[in-house]
Amino acid sequence: MYALAMNKRRPRGPVPVYQLVFNAVKADIDAGRLKPGQSLPTEAEMCEAHNASRQTVRRALADLREAGLIYTIRAEGSYVGPPDAPKIREPLAFERIADAIIEGIRKGTYKPDEVLPSESVMIEEFGAAKKTVRAAVNLLREQGWAYTVPAIGTFVASRDKWPEPR
Image 1 (cartoon, rainbow, N blue to C red):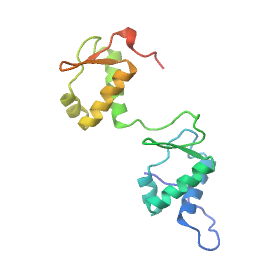
Image 2: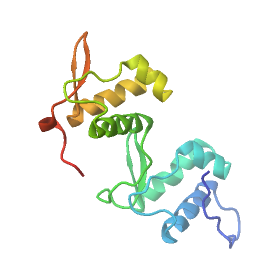
Image 3: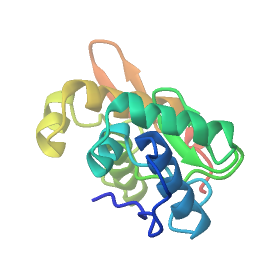
Image 4: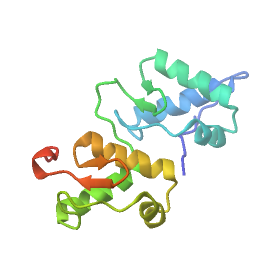
């Protein structure tokens, strides 16, 4: 669960909630609890942690961006530090599925030019939605691990098409 540092010294007079959120995130960054490249909690998690509205959290995030403490990638999330800091985040569901398939390819469970499991099999195996499985397969194709023959299936690409090991 998400927990931000709470300011131990209370400022005098009323402090807007967005400023309290800003101060808590800044304190976590300053203390190293949030590191450069690390993804911030979602807006929903921040709303819950601070008992704040989404608009309030968005105002705090805007101020954090303006201060150069975070950056945001649309439809992906917000991260600590400058945009060139390597990203540190948990893989998304479709990335976890693609990683599991890649591991199977590397281990030889899935061999070059053999068909990969169908969408319905992956949906059941990974407990994922069709859209998530399709995103995973698309990622495999983009990276060079797989290719699709329409109306037939998705196959493991030949070894020379695989990306270089990281």
